[in-house]
Amino acid sequence: MLGRIYDAIDKRLTIKKTIRDQLNHPVLEHVNPLKHPRAFVYCFGGITAFIIVLMFLTGLFMLVYYIPSPDHAYDSVQYIMNNVTMGWLVQGIHFWGATAVVVMIVLHMLRVYFHGAYKNPRELNWVVGILLLLIVLGFSFTGYLLPWTQRSYWATSVGTSMISLVPFVGDYLLKLVRGGAEIGAPTLLRFFAIHIGFLPLMLVLLLGAHFFIVRRQGISRPF
Ligand code: HEM
Image 1 (cartoon, helix red, strand yellow):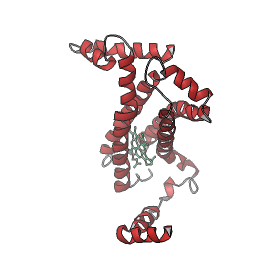
Image 2 (tube, protein in one colour):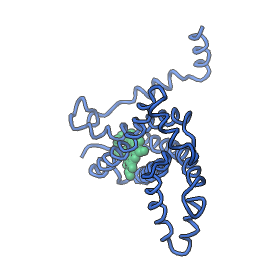
Image 3 (spheres, protein in one colour):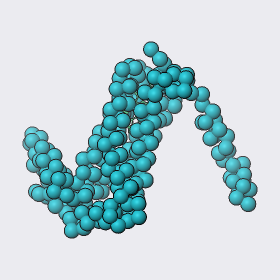
Image 4 (spheres, helix red, strand yellow):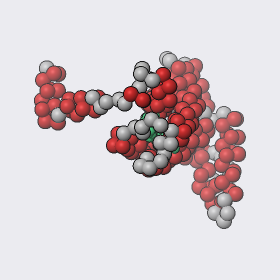
């Protein structure tokens, strides 16, 4: 029954062929770790993407319990860690994944840099990569406040206060980011909205562009 529905859809949209064409894409020898032991450096981008998928999934599960208000944020995270089934694992993956993703991006960038893969014709993908890096750092910065601990409160206090040093518009920008003069409920809600709304949307769009360009241009040749 399901097979017939699938066949009927496939007849109209040729999904099977599209997927087969994508999977049949040949992997060049110099990026295949089974053929070249040092080719594992080409996996750093893929590992980054894998961790990002994990961050999306674990983040989605935590959204079920997390409450973005100063009265409940800390307790809701404690609840996830101590009371929710497997909550400690989901929260742990999200917490350690945040560090791992930055480490993997840096390794990926070093790989691209030392192979000279940022050069013509891949400059645009380097620029897209820099934007991706900024977005991931944005995730780290906004996510740090969400558990609403002393540490996250003061880290965000110091981090945001630097904005006031921007000439002329510094104080205005500081208020815009904090949602007021001090860090409080509006800051938490603002950071939450950026963390789960704006940044994921931009990340997905830019990742789509990044992968599209990699596929179009093919991976760079060996030295
Ligand atoms: C969210 C972060 C990122 C993800 C998930 C990601 C993923 C990938 C993947 C899977 C590839 C193809 C395989 C590989 O070379 O590893 C790739 C290629 C590439 N990436 Fe990234 N990347 C990210 C960030 C960056 C950053 C920060 C830069 C540089 C500033 C960058 C620049 C490039 C370039 C230039 C290529 C083409 C390399 C070549 O053809 O040899 N990427 N990326």
